[in-house]
Length: 236
Ligand SMILES: *Cc1c(COP(=O)(O)O)cnc(C)c1O
Image (cartoon, rainbow, N blue to C red; front, side):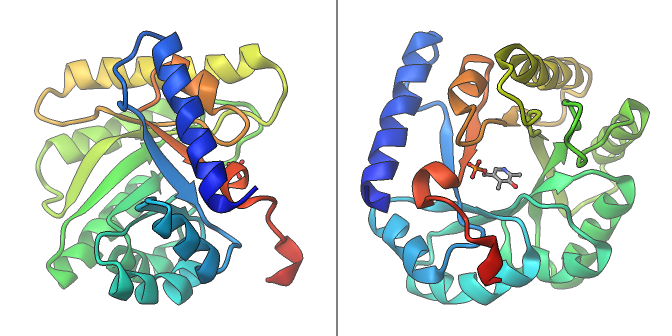
């Protein structure tokens, strides 16, 4: 199947999952995760109407996306992979959102770099909700401090929008669901506590589990393999 056909199929499946769970039609955004896939495949997705993309590695994104932005200024890129401090400057130049904020140190560095560039950026707090994922805040106290720091208004260039997680890599539907439920409950409780922030985004669900994620309240699914096919890790 072509990238276009894959996109149409996934959009249909997203719609079905929205209906099944009694949610409003089109309330779930689709991000195309294009890591390890070349520019021409990304452009095929763009031509099929896709405008939101996600990449894991700053270097790879910086090699591919500037030419895409030049051709299609409406395209949006989010960073979704673990981010080292020395890559933040480049990341905030190309992305409109960093979904993988998992330390206060990183949060401060993102704000510093944005201040220098006189730019604002959206962020999501990435939360560790499943056993075998390594990334994300695993210490709730640190997460609460990070949210508090944003609510205090000290980080003028950083706009928190919500939360991101990766479910554990397992076929056990119950464990996957638990991970999504955990993120949703965390969001509800922090949104209740910090009413001056908009924490409504729940970025959860990938190729293998996006239907479950939508049933559990996802507002954005991040789909790679089901759109672009298997990634060829050996070519990079
Ligand atoms: C690679 C990746 C995805 C997409 O995974 P697929 O299984 O290919 O859909 C989503 N989120 C993150 C954080 C990723 O690293």
